[in-house]
Amino acid sequence: MHVGQSETLTVHPVPGRHPVHGHAKQLHLDPLGFVRSLREHGDLVRIFIGPRPAEVVTTPELVRKLLVAYGRDFDKGALGDELCRHLGEGLVTSAGRFHIEQRRLMQPAFRAPCVAGYSRVMSAHSEEVAHRWQPGQILDLERELAQLTLDILMEIVFGPHPPSELVDAVGRWLSACQEAMKLALSAREAWRRLLPWSRFPRSSNPHAAVLRDILTRTIEQQRRDPTDNLLSTLLAARGSKTGEGMSDESLHDELRTLFVAGTGTLSAALAWTVHAMITHPEVARKVYAEVDTVIGSGSVTVEHVSQLVYTTQVIKEVLRRHSVWILMRRAMEPVQVKGITVAKGRELYYSPHALHHDPELYPEPEEFRPDRWTPEFEGALPRCAYVPFGVGNRICLGESFAWTELLIVIATIATRWRFELEPGHEVRTRIGTVDRPQNLVVVPTLREDRGVRC
Ligand code: HEM
Image (cartoon, rainbow, N blue to C red; front, top):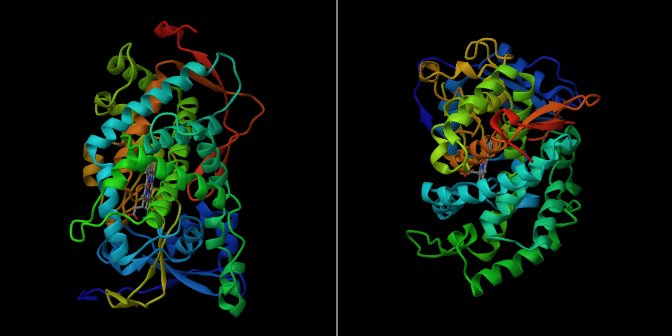
């Protein structure tokens, strides 16, 4: 692949490389600060994970020119390798022709009419949780929201009342998948992979076999006694050229992929939104005012979603401040752009978090300012400057699912509760694939101003 470009790119080395760790220590000790600092070294910079070099793209323009234009020439690199052990060849980890075909088979389950159907599940579960909380109760909000997003996804995929052994098995399996990002950026792992015995399999997720067994039975049950849910849409999907459906192996991989992709990202964004409302009372006031006008006294439905204009701005700002901090690619073919060649096998990263904190794109990037999201501001942003859901051929399949759920959950909670932080718990940022608030311990108070009673 080659595009003729007049201007030539230079790859700038990032200072501070340790002979053994490379830049892995910086990536572990202060990942967000480190990725943000890369822009000052150039548009395209070289870091090392132990002995393994990787180029990092730091401008929206280059993200577009390299990762959107040549998206199909890349796979997911070290993070993909780590995730593969848990997810097999699901949409997040697969590449090439197979990824294109699987994405076509998965797409129907994420189209607008399906998401509109899922919104009823989102609303019912949010109401159930909002009615279960008690005034003055001490809540670990991150945990509550993690369970809520899991329960919503389970019902959307498997229909009402999925077996509790299935929900529990998914929950246990999910917590064992959390090390993937750490391993992908570990110098020790990078050195290990250079050694011949690295091909020995590493210990696997201890909950994988149990989950596999329950999933097999659930899929068989769905085949025997079809009900209308996301799984039935996947079972019915046929390739337009082949007329073939998904193999059982792929179905398992795609379901496990959805469990990972469709829970932690959402619960982190929801938790940060509530945190932002607690720490910015003027933002909360406007959200409550909007919810009172738009929702009135009934339940939140999909029709309300597009009317929640200010709440959307708040969540946009949350996703700017707390997005995936690094995404990885690896060239499957040599890619030549602007006079440089990304050799086959070479890794290329970009950081939505760093792009979202570039002061040239977002004035005062550390400020939480939902008001910045005017149509004029968005219109003037360069393409690929706001990428919480990724870019190009690997853009999040669940984006509209996610927006619907984020707005429905926040609006439902806001019709009933205000929150305060419980003293003595310092909210910290825990970093995995996305950053999430740890110790978000809160106390809810009923919205008596709205006439809400227990
Ligand atoms: C706030 C919520 C979410 C965020 C911030 C988010 C973010 C992302 C990002 C950044 C990617 C691209 C990864 C890469 O380029 O390597 C991605 C991919 C993906 N997401 Fe999401 N996501 C969210 C919710 C969801 C939900 C709810 C689902 C499904 C129920 C989902 C399913 C997927 C899938 C299947 C992919 C892989 C797409 C492909 O490579 O073809 N995501 N997501």
